[in-house]
Amino acid sequence: MKQLHKQSSMNHRRDEETPSTQTPPYSPKSLKHPKSIPRSINYLFKEQRLLFILIGILIGSTFFILQPSLSRLGPTDAHSPIRRSFSKDNTVSSGVSVFSDNHDSSASFSSGTNRAVYGKVGRVPVGIGRRRMRVVVTGGAGFVGSHLVDKLIARGDEVIVLDNFFTGRKDNLVHLFGNPMFELIRHDVVEPILLEVDQIYHLACPASPVHYKYNPVKTIKTNVMGTLNMLGLAKRVGARFLLTSTSEVYGDPLQHPQKETYWGNVNPIGKVASATTIICFGCLFSYSCRLLLSFGLIWLGERSCYDEGKRTAETLAMDYHRGAGVEVRIARIFNTYGPRMCLDDGRVVSNFVAQAIRKLPMTVYGDGKQTRSFQYVSDLVDGLVALMDGEHIGPFNLGNPGEFTMLELSEVVKETIDPSATVEFRPNTADDPHMRKPDISKAKELLNWEPKISLREGLPLMVGDFRQRILNEDEGKGA
Ligand SMILES: NC(=O)c1ccc[n+]([C@@H]2O[C@H](COP(=O)([O-])OP(=O)(O)OC[C@H]3O[C@@H](n4cnc5c(N)ncnc54)[C@H](O)[C@@H]3O)[C@@H](O)[C@H]2O)c1
View 1: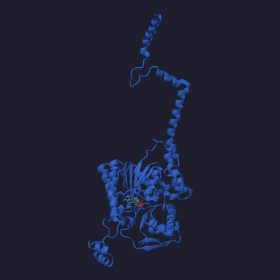
View 2: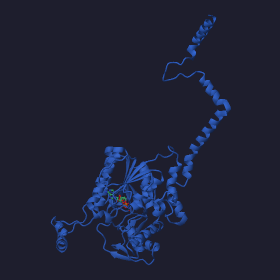
View 3: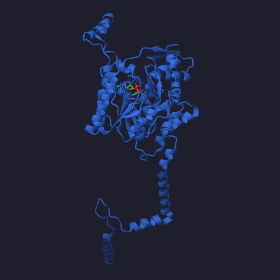
View 4: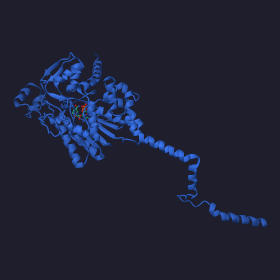
């Protein structure tokens, strides 16, 4: 009985304790014990834990504060590889792959070129520094486009190239194959495409007379429909759009040097042969000529498909800007040269260089007194990027104001390649402008840009690439 009583009194005591020890009913937010806060503070103060935490925070913040300025000092500055390469051996082939065409050595990620190119991407911690852009380059397999792509990849952008390979070559980009930051899509810009991107560099268009006159209707389609499609894409995804227009919009200029305010002197229809000439040619030559005769006119191969195509492209860009709020940039490019130019595209620098290497006479059209200015490709690429990243729409002339007659150019080529090279005169082509020289004061002032490489410095930089390709061609022919 006594025992029973003891048991019941124990049970009673346990029941009394129950409210404090029983598990409370489930609640998603468990109540924190008020005692746990002072306990965690105690925990922090014990064994100098707080001190170690503070030291950790200090080291972390010092690294993140110093890191951007350290990376600016590093070799991955977009300009530094070029400068280094000049000082080293006066060739660009050992610099960044932009100006190198030694594809074999640059094809693997372990090459010096690619170490420079990918170094920056590796060093910048995720989320720190400049935001990585996703950029489309139309015509990126061409001469200028491929150098631009190299520069964008080198600074850490993701690049998608759209190209139909009309004049572009995979060889120009082969060193980037396998790079996760790079994509190449075979695409004709005359067709629409949808991509999520931040910037669009629109270069797709044959640039040399030989190529753009080959199919004038296609050239103007590329300029009009291609530009419309890319502007449509820019509008849809809110991307910034840069058009590579041309000094050809000034036509055969009546103002010299040409400022951006000059509206140009372009012949929109090209030259039309007279009826008598038509009959003569129609009778003598082919069926197609006689067919054209039935329309009463014969159109000689002219440059208006290109000139007017680019002028229309500029108009479209400005209309999309004013009407649809698209952020546009317009560059008017003057004659540019460098490695990866097509060997036989009829452009004067590539013509002279290829002819001098092949020991052929350099072809001078007309009296050779017409002038041009020649810009090295790295200068142009720097200008395009400055324009895209800047706040000004343009148009901006991007060219080298150093002016040379064709005969003077042939002299520089002789000095650089072969002192025994000769020239051969031929009748001039239709509508060939007499003078071309950019006024670049607007770009100097607003983009803080001007070309740095003179013709005498730049020409030797393309000779190695031309020699190599001509040699490969000859070997291919079994020579
Ligand atoms: N190089 C110069 O001196 C110069 C001067 C003035 C303007 N530009 C302009 O700069 C741009 C690039 O010129 P470049 O010298 O590199 O010429 P390029 O011929 O080497 O390159 C043009 C690229 O566009 C591609 N392309 C052509 N039509 C296309 C289409 N319908 N769809 C997709 N891709 C197409 C070609 O395959 C090529 O890869 C052109 O827009 C040109 O008008 C160049």
